[in-house]
Amino acid sequence: MTATDTLAPSARRVAYDRDGYVVVRGLLPKELMARAAAEAEALPARFADLVSTRNIRCRWQDNVFTGECTFETFDPVIDLSPASRDVALAPELLALLNDLYGGPACLFKDKLIFKPPGVKGYGLHQDWIAWGGFPRSFLTVLAPFEPADRDNGCTVVYPGYHAGGSLSPEDGQYHELPADTVDEAAAVPLVLDPGDVAVFGGFTPHRSDPNTSGRWRRQLYLSYNAAADGGDRREAHYREFHAWLERKYAEYGKTDTYFA
Image: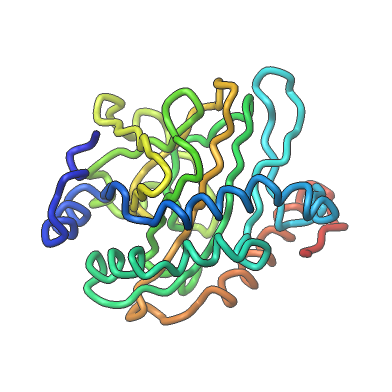
């Protein structure tokens, strides 16, 4: 249990502003999460035609035990999974974000990270990227479909560092942060059960370890911006993001990418 779990709603924004993250237990209805989990389990087979290293909707990670390049993520996902869309727009979640923002939130980005056994995690980084118009109010909500813990590679956040803004060059590129950017003793693993949510800001450093368990760690990563910070920007973001991905792939000689 983290220090934010038992806060009254009126105190959550204070904690979020101070720490850069907040955890709320049991926010989302169990039946909704069960429906979303069932859809998530079926998605890779149901949309097998979309699972390709050329499709920029898909992300891949190496397996730390076998070295195999493994499918890990659909980004975006709400057009494939109605239940995931219902989670992203759940009244309970939007009310929480309204409290944190002091006004309405707009869905900015949606991805489902499957994180099967053996898949490696992500290095220390911040989610905010210095693109023109990228919202500084950007935040991410974690909504797990099964328990997320240290063994299966839960997300780990570092409170307070968000106050320093961007901790890497603001050149429009993704940057991992050196390990000594943060004090590892301050790390907070976001151990979550279905129905729980964790929210962290775009400037909050975070990382995840490999999934060394025999269990999956399917989890929605839903990102939002304050409506007052540009309004509905999801479609514009994905146009910009896909163009950026195409340029990055082309730098490595991969010019046959597409989105489907």
